[in-house]
Structures are given as structure tokens and as C-alpha cells.
Length: 184
Image 1 (cartoon, rainbow, N blue to C red):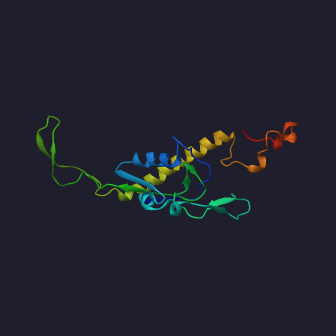
Image 2 (image 1 turned 120 degrees about the horizontal axis):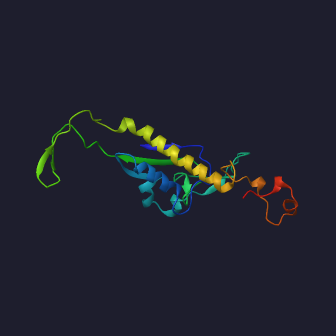
Image 3 (image 1 turned 135 degrees about the horizontal axis):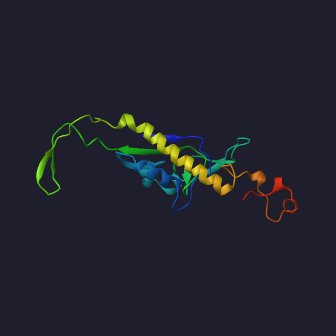
């Protein structure tokens, strides 16, 4: 299943242990029946040359928006573990249901051969239940990343406002003009 997240602000995530794609993979692989995760070009990207897989930055040209975007989205919306403002695209692989109505050979805890016959109601396919689970887990991960970013910026912004950032030696900021002080 492919998940596409649009409108994700840049700068969510960390470059090492809390990489955004690692948090997404962790969340997706914690769901039942998931066996694989890839972001962007995924495994196909391992066969590409670096020059072809590179997501070069280009001018966005949108007034009031971010100044930069990427020409391609091979990395799936993150670079170095941090969102870049392009759509986040990932895929999750699901396995088939193993509890089926057909008798299957197995073993008891003591090692004796036996037959397992599932009784009762079991889903023949997990696919109809998977999209809402993926969407919910994705929302939790992205919301958590937004809340962490807000904490780092000391307010309700999720993106650094360049108009508020003033070099440390700026005389006006040091003379008590709060509207020109840098956010910490």
C-alpha cells in the first residue's frame, strides 16, 4: 500500500536517532501483518546512481511559501532524516493472513506433531483494514514530529520564520525591540 502525505512542513525530524522516515517505519512495522517498508524510490533507489537519485534544490517561486523545493522526490519527502516540504511518499508491504480455515501442521510446546484448525470468524484478507491503520499511524507520527518541532522553536510555529531571526549582534534587538528578537 502506498501512502502520500501532502502539506507536511519542512524541518520535521532529526538527522540521527529520530529520523522522520525511521519513525514512520517503526510505526508502520508495528502494525499487524506488515512485513516491509520503503520510502521514496525505496529498494529501486539502491540500483540508481547517486547523480540520478539526487533531489536537487530549486527555487519554489511561490510568494509567502518556502523559497526552495526539490526538482524530484526520489528520497520520498525527507533528506537526512528531516522533512523538506515535498510530499512524503512511502509503501508498506503486508503479508497474507496465516490463520485460515484450512488444517495446518504444527507442533505443541512439548514438541509433539499436531494439526491446527482455526475455528470461528477470521478475516480472509487484512487489506480492507490496512488503509485506515496506516493513515492513523502516519497522523500520529507526523503530529508527534510537529509537536516536537514546536517545542524546539518555543511556540506554536512549526517552521522558522526568517523575519523573526536576527543576528546576535543586531543593535535593535539588543535595545529592547521584542518584535525583532530572535526566537529561541
